[in-house]
Image (cartoon, rainbow, N blue to C red):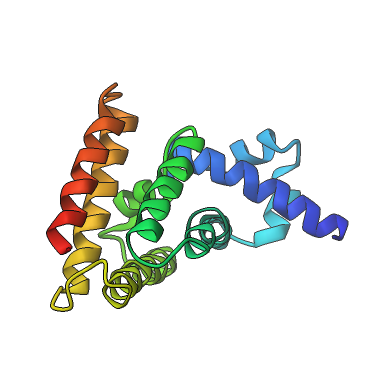
Length: 193
């Protein structure tokens, strides 16, 4: 890896953590430069704009998300074991960032703001939902789910459960969250069998 690439990864790592805590919109180049011991102009030179920095942080987070959530789940047996692995991996992903899942916070920041950041986030979320639909389809093919299920509805139901977990775990700090999530996931999966 080159020095420039190492520096960029350092910036993206710090930016991801900061965006997790403050939100992607509230992260500033000045604070990020201070966090990475760089000058504002030195940091700016890597991205040329705050919007480009935000998009690069989303791309970087998407790559890490795929590597730590989706890819390991795909190594599990198709069907319910894979879905359970995906949920566990998502929980771990969401819990490791001090502020929680960057995609959840960015969705709040950019849901009604047109522009390049929203477009990048929307593409990532569409890819994620497509992954959930494909997991439902593979569960049907594996015989774990009925053949007549609506894969779009499954993606909606599962993502809603994950977002609920995020709220209870991060904001409400509910000590029973993991227990409630397991019960909710069991009920959800039973509904599709």
